[in-house]
Image (cartoon, rainbow, N blue to C red; front, side, top):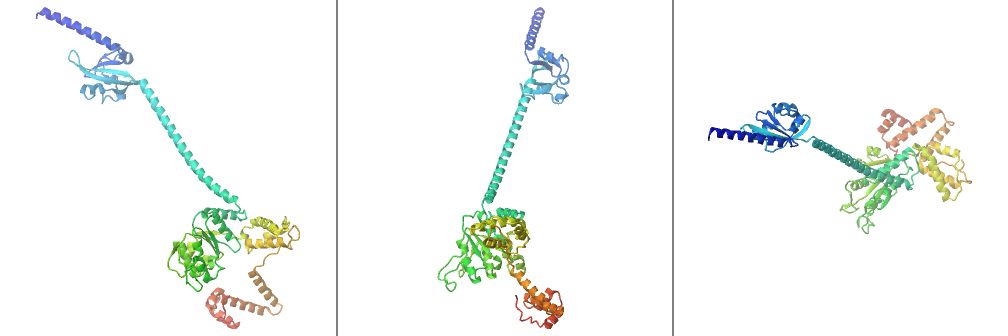
Length: 506
């Protein structure tokens, strides 16, 4: 090729390249995204109009210094440099912060027409999209938080509902208990605590020991326990252990086999078998014999009994309520009551207060008894004078509620008018107190018949005789009781001609 032709060809090629470059730049300028060309030394060689309008003219400067500075972390991990190294997938999108904007870009390396290595960077401003995404995420988080709060509120509401349901059930049971006439009269604090105790333990199957003085209402408490228990519809038997002959009590409670004793012509079930599945009330439990104590312990421990004359254990399911006015703890110390049986009976102890400990209930009780007996005796009594009330409050009531009932029953029956007077109000006299009063009256009368020394000697002789009687004629124990020396006591016994051997326990 001639030199002229060659020159012409180069001129035409240069013109074509310029035309192509012009067209290429024109095309890039109309693209809405930002376009940059970067050399392999990371110097920006070209920026389209969109890039120039946003970033300003950065041509001739390194992109790591102008676009992705320290805030983007690109000085050490530049995505453009990765594109040159081939560690970024071709066409892979990268998100980063550039001059406060959220930018999404991709970089594609290529060879320029002059053989230099270039990378075309196509950037898109996604700040608005990111803002919306953040708002949507915050909204979703808010929704999740709202849902979580609502779920927690629902759970709390459900827990509250369950708790309220339980409390309502308790209140219903108490309302039923308060709404029924349980026969227990009195609104003092001690009686409120007694009722509360009964309602707490009634629905269990635990053995209950009811203690209290005679006349306080132990049977009434047993009735209430059974009435509010889950066995209220099952059989209920009451046994006064003190009213049945000791030899008959065991066969009465546990039954007997044919031929077990004279007169046992056929097998017979005892009360524990008859009341199986229900409740048995054993009153005066402190008076049962050692043999009976052993048999009862077996029932409480193993839930089984053996009939008199039999050998086969029989399973029974009976709830036991026992009652006594005896101090069982002292009876255990005196070897009169088994310790293991005491523990079995004393699982739950309900102590009934004496009437003198709750005198604020006397007016309510008196009103109750007067109303009851005026109907029974067809009397028109409707008034208790304050003088009668005062006497009722002043009395010590050793016989407790039973004594109060007896006094008012007699008063209503003997009243002549519609008002009880002092004449009709006659208190029961304690046998023990009457015996003591008779003795002291006797000793006081002797003061007019003899000297003080003679009366004191007779009084001392009676004291020594009483001490010997209490200790079954044992002089040593009597001396300890009287806190005197054994020799001194022997001298007095000899002086008063007291025979310790002939003294029997009173």
